[in-house]
Image (tube, rainbow, N blue to C red):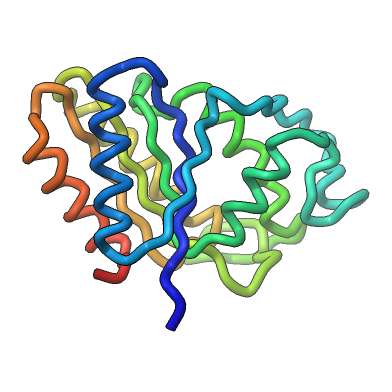
Length: 194
């Protein structure tokens, strides 16, 4: 059986030592689980905001009409077994870079609707979607932001038809051992093969 493939959408800060530690621990954790890992540093990519034009649904089904790195990111996500969000937690949400990339993934679902657990959602465009793992980074614990972050990831997992998901937050004052324990828990919870 082929190794699983992960794409890390790195919306974290490039020059922060804590972020660098988290990025390295995440990569090592995935690789030790036998997962081939590609990191997309979103701060280096030019991704225009979604314009809401619906071109990805009617003009070029499945592909955003904006020809930039947003197309590459969406293609990498749908081609992965595991998609990882690495982001500072901002008021419970994602970094601006990750949010822009995520907005452009509307092309990965159909414009038609279906009922999912009593809710209306877009239908699948593809037969298989990746699992979702999200690691949020906070300077210090903040229960409300952590709860909002977890719920946001859960809702994105439903919208993107993820067969499994996990979300967690690591804090700068946790230390490296706690960070690695959080990552191990998230990998197991998301169903990433160990």
